[in-house]
Image (cartoon, rainbow over all chains, first blue to last red; front, side, top):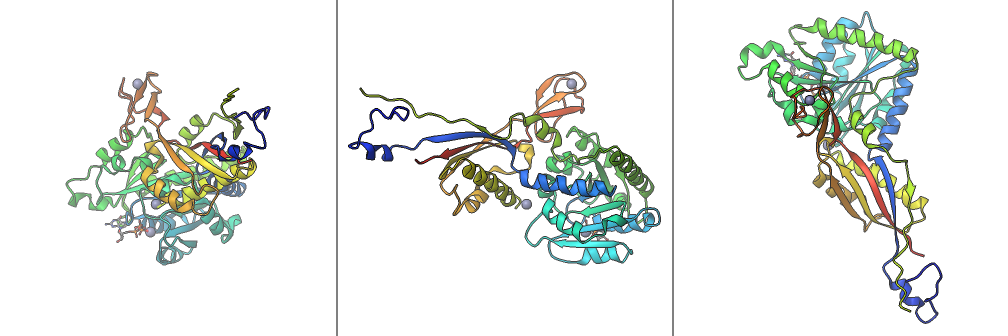
Length: 282
Length: 116
Ligand SMILES: Nc1nc2c(ncn2[C@@H]2O[C@H](COP(=O)(O)OP(=O)(O)OP(=O)(O)O)[C@@H](O)[C@H]2O)c(=O)[nH]1
Ligand SMILES: [Zn+2]
Ligand SMILES: [Zn+2]
Ligand SMILES: [Zn+2]
């Protein structure tokens, strides 16, 4: 059917036109599926940066020791740094209560059925915290090695925990999560003497196989082993971030940022009308 | 299931595109996804069935173009095929590689039905 000159459309066959397969317009887009979340994440990050706050996202399987690590970390750092915590949990307020017992501000996000935090949930939590009073913000994500890795929260660094009671091949089994780690912590090291099948070296090899150069630290928050290196790392990151934001710069976590930059070549929307095939039957 | 929140984002973008181009319906949606995106195509398809109900994309077809995992070596410069849990350079074995494909999570194309 010719839609440029209308030459073969008459009052007699006009109805046929309506029954023809309709013209489709393909629109090239090339934007990330997470555009909405990513935009909110940038807003969150800018808000934190204006206050010079470093935000660290803790991720792991359920029970790998995130809250225990935060308790021990806060106990030793709170005299030197102003700390607040956002707790993500499916149901309870327990983790936030444990943090508050350390004398710092903790806001609990109960996600209900959602298995991960997202940038909008974190925005709501930021509203509840006096950001002018903080140097370091921890976000304890929902215990889950799959979903949280896909969502930028507006934080700066991903710390991924792997407890020695899990397999040392966890990085190979959950490559998306461990590829995103800026630091991997092997936790509950006090239990290592009782376990013959977990090797921190092998865990590190599995991480390297993901092309991830992140440092690996082994520690026990229960027995206060290896904590100094972690506390040192944190304090260095806080200082580095303060000078970064003073230069109007920021830091993005390793959430697929390499890939995204590389694969997004096209403009936001390119409108490309396609004319239906010309089929004159003169 | 985070595939559902991804679909929310997807529907938001598709609906906006349809409105912008005054389309009545969406014929198809093409996604480019790599295995390192953290998204299961099957779960995404299920979530899409739920999200599209009552929307401009109610009858749209969801096309998923899987992407291969490939890396470029920062040491020797070689480009090679890789797998989700082995991103080492196949040529020299170095771990200093950059992913060039495999973590995409991209809305690539939307086909709009423009009824006159
Ligand atoms: N032996 C030992 N046990 C630990 C250590 N850290 C945590 N645990 C124990 O591991 C269990 C889980 O610790 P949590 O700190 O609640 O773990 P989590 O990652 O916050 O858990 P979720 O928030 O439910 O995902 C508790 O029984 C802790 O006492 C450690 O360093 N050594
Ligand atoms: Zn916890
Ligand atoms: Zn999920
Ligand atoms: Zn190489």
